Image 1 (cartoon, rainbow, N blue to C red):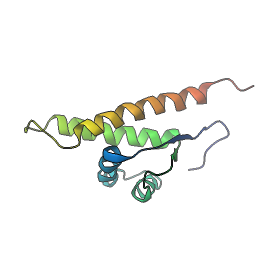
Image 2: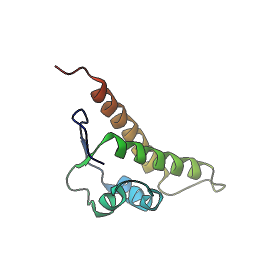
Image 3: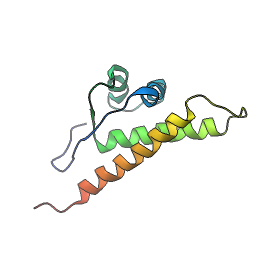
Length: 106
């Protein structure tokens, strides 16, 4: 998929526990146009460039993982807090990407 003239990339740095949990979820990114490979190769040292469709995919995968881990019968689930933080960051980035798409051009 190629970005259009109005598509603005969002650069974000993901590291630590959030990156570790995100890398565990790349198997769930079936139709992601290479996003799964980019996440697997990402080391967290520099910001990664994501477009709105990448953020849509990440939001769906992370939301599903949070929902599954919240439904877990055991009380403590490793990585849940990191996923929740990542979920909030992705939602904010996605909102920003869609706002930039809808801004009037000068």
